[in-house]
Image (cartoon, rainbow, N blue to C red; front, side):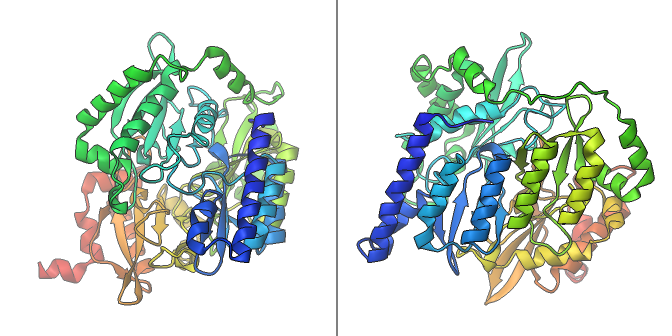
Length: 556
């Protein structure tokens, strides 16, 4: 993984000390709350309902054991013993005291971490496929390009005060999308042309929130050396023409819609040709230098098949079920990718205790070359586990409560913190997620339902990606009571789609029953081997709506 050089260390340390002075001035009253607000946001510090929240960047979701231990230390010393992993592959602390935040940032800097650009109208944390570098189906390790983009975008002088926040995702799989690329302001797929050259399909104008949109493709193949100049051209057009008079119409998706894809692409092309042959051109030696940070670990030469593993799978049914659900193919023979679920029945999606962080850091050192990945689905990954070690890893995860065999099943819920913490929320997400996961706690039932993604947002800002859930829930306030709008048919894969509102919202005490009716309808209509999203696309909304709103359908 990438390691700081002397410039990185100096930059982050200077930022910590700068913020320490700003906090001191706020504590004495020399800075008003309004004056302090943009300064704290530049350092990832939000004011929420009950306390400040600090969001820490985890670039493209990659952590070392040392870094995860530090995150656990911070949770234990300065928070309430836990952290919350987010859909941007970051971690949030919900209870830090303002006076402690400079010390927290200083500790983060000691392990090459920070909270820079995790808030504000700038380019946020660049996200990537959690299996980058190890996936059997990838074209190339996308972390190389995510790191290049991170370096280019950090403190970019033109793009620190954009019309609105800006999010970029990169995926390198040949036919899949594990990074929700099409729902980003800029989405990038690595491609290889007929000559074998690396390039990028670049999309712009995706997003969720009030106006969900799937990003259209602007360029099908941007050559590798031109990546930064093309991204810069998009950002320049947006920075110049994006709306600053209306917060709800300030995202790039609104500009793309209003301008039209063809006209917007032409504007980008014009700017790109003007700056293409500039200092933004990526030299081969610089790409190679960054790639060197992501060289494969020292794998052993192993057979692709492990007889020891095969025997364990036959002897232990629980292990076999977990292996089927949470273990993914690795491109290196004899190794596997392990997903640690942060979604136990009745738990808070994405939450992890300090003790669990310490223990997973130890597991990663023992079994995965000291490397951990964070997924945008709010789980963790051990990316380099020998097949012969899978049983031992599983037993450890069971003891830690991180071995629920529910990856991509209905209880693998994405959820934002909602009204329990967030000052923007209109309803709670966490209690609903807990009740749903308990209602579907039977793993046999979940496996029978099959792949089904359920996402929950506590407000229209859609931090819980409800638009992209096969089943999506949006919490709304109706005269002081919590209701949940239900959407169906969302999907964040390569064939992305936006969920359709099924009908009137359900009360908090009704929503679990509504989801039960949706899954029952799917089971009655599916063909053998058909996923929920495929059944929905085949039969449409109508049969689900008939089950959800029988009285309304009868009246019609």
